[in-house]
Length: 519
Image (cartoon, rainbow, N blue to C red; front, side, top):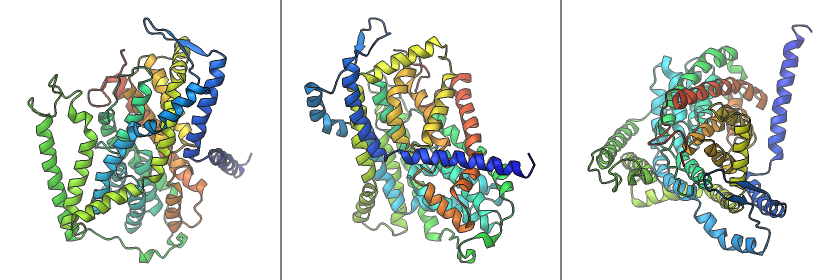
């Protein structure tokens, strides 16, 4: 084999792999259709499994034989019909996400989040631009699509203005926004969303178990800095050198017309006002929880654990976004009356139509899965298998993270994937001794790192469109090849932090969260 032919064959094999991933992903129906089919499938399978007597012995002391409950009969149909509405309205993530997004909507519509992001990136020292871009990308996930729509194009423009390759800036921002999706300094909208699904899954084993939005905060807080460091290293040591010197003739747009708007004096004044209001809110909230007499401590024990503060964290997410957002909007004259605030919240809710439809069918699937006892039986049999092969130590999380990363290539929605996999793996890993909060933290790693290399990710097309502006022959394969080093480094580095944090240092992944499950 000649040296000239070897790279061509490698590129051909890589391209075929990418084509296969895209083909498999395209075979999957829309996530909403997928959940509807899964719900229907559970009904049919419950009848078949019940007919053949599928069961499992509860391994806990005094445990009884658990049998499949059929939904493919008159009693099952009655339960489905009467529970259809309550399955939907009682689905924990629905209310928590909608309430949190009401506050985020005010902050986003006022322009505060966009201005804060621009200020962070544009005011960074040239040597610190890369780390600022990745860091801003990670923290931007509190505002849903803002990182994709605002930061990624902005980062490409800033890199070009500094004489650097614009695609390196795009890649750095994309890695932070998408591959670092779950990490953040603050508890964001994704935390209550996943926690609600985890709670439902944990209730299969322990009906009283509750997973709060703060369950992974410590680990995700420290992960933010790790992602920023790793993203910077990959950008400056691997991606940018590989891209080489940028040739403006490769662009499909007139680069001279690009303008980067600095923050106006009014925007700066608005950010100062928003920052002061956030500080005041922080002090007021601290007074309710830090002192022993804090009114939001647990009224029975006086501790932070199980306190109204932690149980009502979604309300505080709403407040800490809504108030600074309104203050910023008031100063910048974007929000002049209560009508503007209402419009902001209404617009935020108008974008949630697809999510609400998804939740309806996801809630039915989760409820049916629980009613049939499939979750308990699969968890017991899966846990028994793991014990028989001796795979009950921390190494089980290596396979779990890799599995989540692979599934994410074809099912890019974090909530959709977790709604499908959590009812199986949360109970299974609980039975071999691990707490749901730790299982959820491991899932978030696998679910995040492959976002940037799958065409199934909802914003992949948008990112590709931005890339084409600067290099007109950019294709899906080119884009994935550019982002692949981030996925590899993030997967290894983030998983290593997980094992170091949880098992070597024995640190909790969140506020008052255990590492091991003790029934």
